[in-house]
Image (cartoon, rainbow, N blue to C red; front, side):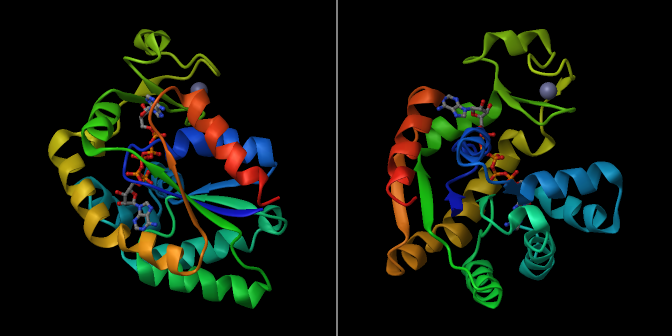
Length: 216
Ligand code: AP5
Ligand code: ZN
């Protein structure tokens, strides 16, 4: 299956992407994770992306599209993939369509995680991420994270710089100005399905998998 997850910052894309990708046996491709790995590694791509990420702004389309093009050319993406955090603008969506046509594929479905702004602010301000395996935790909903150690791999948990309140406000503004238009773009293609992404993580996963079963 070729699937895109879309939704505001903190909607739970990364959390759900883990479970859904594993259930569907496809690689999870997260542009945010790829950028963060490049920032940590100090690569030229990371140095360029960092100034936008720190400000809560989107990295320019050209940079992002080229990065995804390279990633989709890797052998593990040939049979299907789950994109988390890409596309994020209409030009990125158009570039993805073109890329897939060139490869002889098309997207099966775009799943929108629907959550109100108040809830995403609450989720981001309590988020902790494992430095080692990238798993995300929430200090209120996963009390075990308060020990600062990842339950899965023993790695150290940290809070993302771009989860500071003022940066979150910019990220939400970027979402409504640049990413929300994707909803109309994909519903025009008949590919968009929205789900309620509130409530326990397992309930959201169940809702998502029930919808996706009809596309298999
Ligand atoms: P990116 O990493 O993609 O950030 P984002 O879209 O803002 O999404 P987040 O990772 O913040 O949230 P999420 O929806 O994955 O939520 P999560 O599962 O962690 O991008 C970062 C930056 O990179 C961008 O600002 C931009 O600069 C750049 N970038 C990336 N892609 C780009 C692109 N395509 N174009 C241009 N620039 C790009 O959950 C959040 C918290 O809530 C966690 O603590 C989690 O435990 C908790 N939680 C999850 N689900 C639930 C639930 N059901 N109930 C309670 N808590 C929950
Ligand atoms: Zn870990």
